[in-house]
Image 1 (cartoon, rainbow, N blue to C red):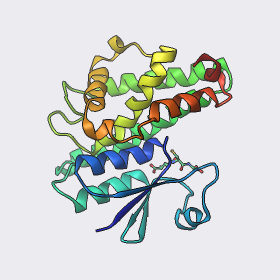
Image 2 (cartoon, helix red, strand yellow; image 1 turned 90 degrees about the horizontal axis):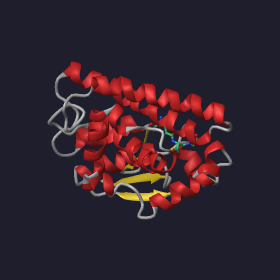
Image 3 (cartoon, rainbow, N blue to C red; image 1 turned 45 degrees about the horizontal axis):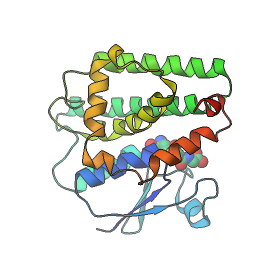
Length: 217
Ligand SMILES: N[C@@H](CCC(=O)N[C@@H](CS)C(=O)NCC(=O)O)C(=O)O
């Protein structure tokens, strides 16, 4: 099976698929594009103009949750739970993590202090709701690493860099969430899921957004 992942270096949704592929030790090629100036071939194959796109022997898949399930179903032992109720719950939480990623982006993008504070408050509420869902770990479902973990890890990759500079989240307020993040960030599949200069690129991105936080980074 030939797999080619179409990526943008800073995209958290692509990162989810990279984590799944690395964790399952599946060989793949990765092609980076500039989303500000997407090539014509990409616009032709990506129905929503978004990454990730996964080309499977030339066939196109899009949407990170769908791509991850496809990778999971066709390689190695499944990461998604086998119990249908737990699997459905995991799918719902994966959607929740997508909302958190969007809130995180809105924090970066907020033009005014007021808008930033509103999005920060959304993020902290979302963390609290998630905290009440988490057990003692180490993973989202307890002992078993799953697609829910691969979908949540990109939140932590960015949150660490933001929080070092903006100090908006106190780990003591959500200890399970914090511990879970530390566990995920220590995993080789997560560490290696971004480009080597990711931190510099993300900080540059925040600084040059022209948003409220740009001057505070
Ligand atoms: N729901 C999509 C979201 C993907 C997404 O928003 N990708 C962003 C980059 S991180 C994108 O390609 N944006 C380009 C655009 O919206 O034009 C998924 O989970 O794959």
